[in-house]
Image (cartoon, one colour):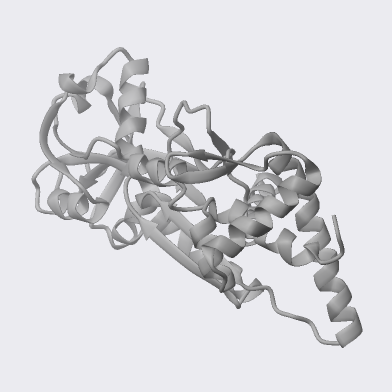
Amino acid sequence: MADEQVPHLETFAKAAELSSFTAAARALGLTQAAVSQRISAIEKALKSPLFQRQGGHVLLTDSGHRLYAYAVRILALHREARQEIAGQKTPLTGELTLAASSVPGEHLLPEFLAAFQERQPHIQVRASVTDSQDVLHQVEQGHVQLGLVGVKKESPHLEFRSFAHDTLALIISAKHPWHRRKRVALSQFLQQSLIVREPGSGSRSCLEQALAAAGKPLHDLRVVLELGSNEAIKEAVLRGMGVTVLSTRTIQKEAESGKLHAMQIIGLSMSREIFVTWDRRRVLTIPARLFLDLLEEARDSNTHRE
């Protein structure tokens, strides 16, 4: 490859990260034809295809994955050399796209985003909060680079890595007859009017798995209400419409004020891991890898404290 191929490598890397020649052209201020020409020039020089088209996206071939690893190192060295000669450090820029389910999105993500912004103030972050199944769909479709969820999915494309732990509990109002108790029998829980999250929620999936392990399907319970947000469920419990099973992270303020009370259900194991996930068919951008490093640091720090 000739010396002028550094811009070509940058174009290749951007197309790999965005899984799109069109998006790469827009990001680099080039025409789509120019992007295609640069990619073709590299493929011709290496005598190997670098991308394959799939579902409206371009995904790296095995050769493309190998080249991307070198491209990242070459571009980093190129940037470092320019900084050394010019005597001025160029800030790292780019975009990080995230999707998170309710518990990690509302109770973990804000702290991580604040820490990430402090480290990388010039990287733009776009994050959305939705249910777990939608997060996984967005990751698989390439709409976001990383997803934060409380449930795993069997998928040949998705990689999962644990970075936090969570505990679910039976949540009742302060006016409930059980409000002074710490635990309740499963048979007693089954008789309660239950408010649950919608299908696709990680919290609901965790409850269903715990019930299945105890030989009790969800339809054995008296489900009186299904709501699409933890805040709506908490409000319904406060109004005496039933009890619920939620992450203890979601009721910290209400528990401290005495409005809601968390209890253990004897015979149900409802602890879970919180995962960061990505599509292994796509390369992780530098911003995504830096955010992943931050999550791993937090995980290792919590492990040492335990």
